[in-house]
Image (tube, rainbow, N blue to C red):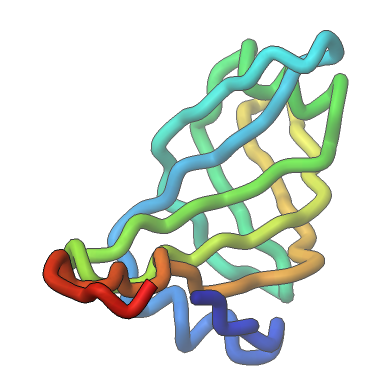
Length: 115
């Protein structure tokens, strides 16, 4: 089940989450995932202190995703896609392009024979 999040509502939605995972790929498509604490500043998600390998991935392919896991198993993850730029200092700015709250659809009860 997915619920779109309007980008103007992103700040209020972010307040419900503790941390995120940044997903990036290098030029060859190999994935890189790191835990981060993005801050929304002037309509961009800003992350500081990223390592050289993650910044190199962003330089090779600026299309990234961020995933904030839910606090509870039944909660929604927040997924945000965007375009990133990385500085040599490890500072990354991501311009969000879309955001969605997502969780798997509820499974049918084990004794449900209607299928």
